[in-house]
Length: 391
Image 1: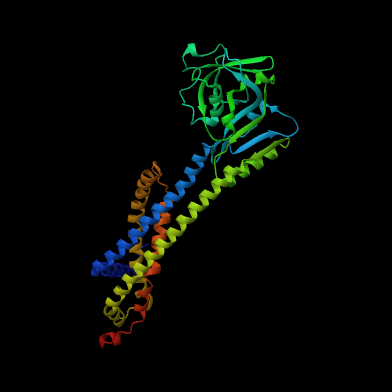
Image 2: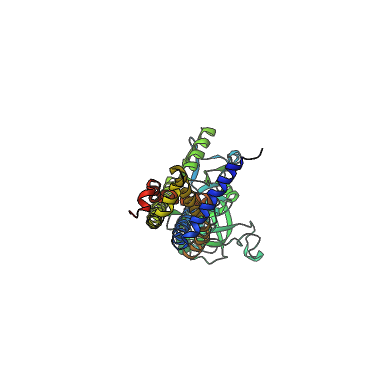
């Protein structure tokens, strides 16, 4: 189906006039395009940093340890087999699970007359909470064979325990509970400023042998990825699945994560809104000058039969094209800027988020259209007053 000739010619003439409007005042329109691009650049950079901050905080808080803990309600311990029933795959990522058994025991260096009473934490996997403190290379396979005791165990000492024992790294240590004994090699020391500094971490199987509690654990500790709300929802669903257990989110972590992100998000949103308002004011001031220069053009359009609605459509199309061009250029520059700022300020480049690009372009487009408000008054210009020279 072919389009009527009159409609085709009208549309062709419409875009020819729009092209003429843009090229006739290149200097002022370049200033408008520059203001829109600068606003879009800052908007896209801040929005990309905001979206990336959410991912970064979730990742960084993982290093602080578990954010959900599962405890027995009626007994002192729970079956280790419970670990296999915990759902691990979530939309926000994979849950990291560790089983722990806590035992009151004593530790000493061979040939030392004075043992030290400590809390032994049997972890599976060993020292997963201290992954940042203990080098990944430290394992029974990488330690010298001569440094390993017959049991092949390694242990991680809290800072205060290591100082009280005056233990040297790779030294053999003896852990005993009544008549049960385990030996291990001192692989690393940790310092957190918390209760972990006063305990000894060993493998779960060794702790179970010390306590004579095979296949039992004191707690199951989880690192759940996601926002504080997602963590709370996961804990609630886990409590419904295991009503005989006590599932507790560690609120100081989830609440701290929520507060930090809310403050960062609020600050960035306020800055984005301020930038868009200032961009709109700059564009509106430039549009006002353009409107004053176009009074004669509009008077001529209306004198030869141009309708008010068509005149408004011309200026609206012009503002839309400027906003679209400024948004496309500025959003791309803004995402690149956010990657540079992330690298310079945080030491790690922000990842480009695809959702930021169309949002930044849309916001710039809205600012451009709203800032074209001064051009609306041109539609009410009377041709006769323009031709008589009346301003």
